[in-house]
Amino acid sequence: MTDEVPEFSLMDGRRSTSNVVVQFFVFAAVFFAFVSILWQIHSNLTAQGLTAGYDFLFRSTGWDIAFSPLPYTINDSYVRVLFLGYLNTILLGLACLITASFFGLVVGAARASNHPLLRWSGTFYVEATRNIPLILQIIFIYLLLINAPVTSRAINFGDLFFLSSRGVFVPIINIGILGNVCVALGLTLCFILAAMCAVKPGSDRRRYLVGLMAVAAVIVFLLAFNLAGRPAAEWLSIPERQGLNFVGGLTIAPELMSMFLGIAVYGGAFIGEVVRGGLNAVPRGTLEAAKVLGLSPWQSFFYVHLPQAVRIMIPMLSNQYVWLMKATTLGIAVGFTDFFMVVSTSINQTAHTIELIVILLIGFLVLNGVISVGMNVLNRVVNKSGASVR
Image (cartoon, rainbow, N blue to C red; front, side, top):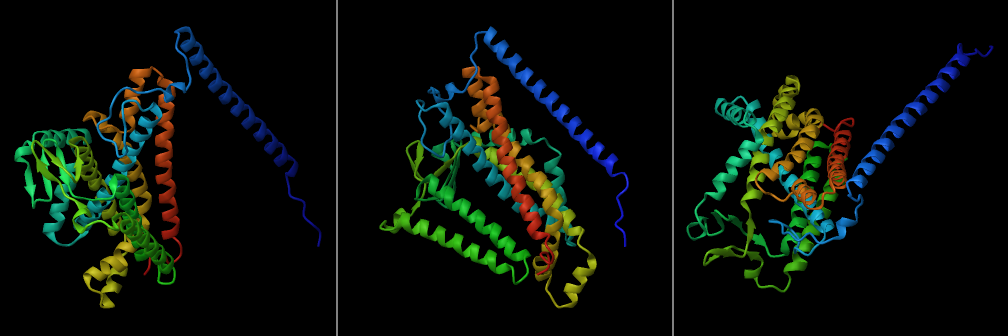
């Protein structure tokens, strides 16, 4: 048997070489144009007497921020205030994503159910929420909160929760704000691991169950380490009215609460439609088989219907999560000190527009990139062979 010589091998080599040459010249042209633009910007700034660079980041800001999970003074640098604004965006975004996912799961399941009352209620929620611009909803909630009763006549919910024009006052575990943030992130990770246990088959579920137990053990250790030696009465900080203000507990400012409720409720409507679409896409024969096997409606939903719908929902949920994280930039409308507002204020004070816009772009690129990568990893895990059948 004689070896066959591939036809047009010389022509393919010439085409490959020409393609490399064309790509090189295109890349060189784009790079040259980019450098030219940067040089022109630098020349314009120099002509106006403005200096470019990031040295200003280490100067004192001289202004305060309304909400910060970490200590901050007006003498701190721009680096710290930018970090705190970025941290506020992350905390708000995570809280909104988790709450919107819960709302979306409930609403999507209600809209996909056969019960008329649940279906109509879910439809009313979706249509009444997603057809009103998000910024209007945030401003409306903010106006309701700032016009709530004053502190002396705050609305009382069981002597644990209070609502006044100064914000919402809630109990908090007495381990500091950063410790509570760590516990909240740990509980979020526990929720994710528990969800993965639900959609994985029996043999692979053990890995996620071990991870769930490890995270739970870390949370218990963190709480025990911080609360050891304290009286039981000091474990939980409960807000108490003293004079014209409250002491103890956690104060959620109206700006933060309006952003949280607005984005969570608005995002829940869109996520609910994603959930409904995923549930309706599951083959009816699978559900009928589960019914024949004697599974109850709840068992059929959690063990068969929902795990298979997750495979369909994840790609669409990735887009919704990225969009909801970017929606936190609307905080500037109500004065919430998120990353976007801190950058805007810094631009007004320093006139370093280009540098701060670059920081803003990189910040959101990293944040949304982490969400996209995480959802892609989750999509690959869930869509492995047999991952959707329990």
